[in-house]
Length: 147
Image 1 (cartoon, rainbow, N blue to C red):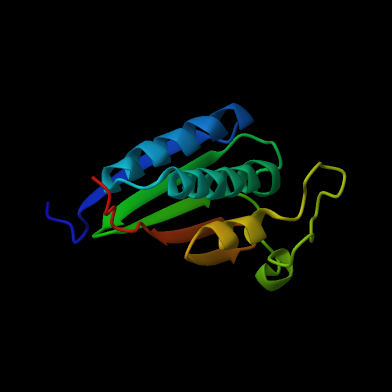
Image 2: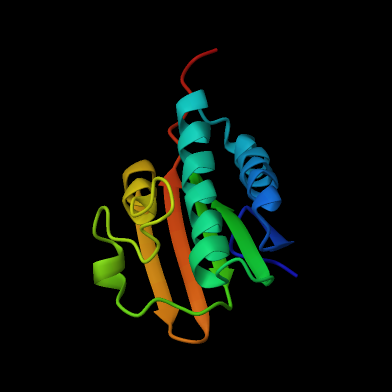
C-alpha cells in the first residue's frame, strides 16, 4: 500500500498519566529521522505532552480511554494527530485562550493550547461534544546544514 507520505506511524495508549512520557518519547524518536535540532525535538516533545495530558485530564477526566497518535512525515514536515473519544470541547475559541481552564484546581492549568501553538508551526483543533477531540500539529524541521 503506497502512501503519499514519506513515513507514517500509529500508536494507541491508555489515557493514563504514566503513558504521557512514552507518547512524547515515541513521537520524538519517529521525528528523529528528519535530523532535527535538540530545540526542535524539545518543541515536539512539549507539544505532544500538552496534547496527551489534555486528553487524559479534560477528555477522559481521568477515566480510562484510548488516545490515538498518528504521525506522518512529508518531506521536512512532521504532522502529529492526537485524538481521543472523550467528552469533547464545548467552545474551542474560549478553550484556546491563555489561562482558560475548566480545572482551576490543577497546577499549570490553562496553557496547553497556547504552548502547543507556540512550539509548533500549525495547530488545528477539531472537537465534537460527547464524541471527542482531535489536535493536529505540524512542524517543519529545518535542513541541517552542519556536518
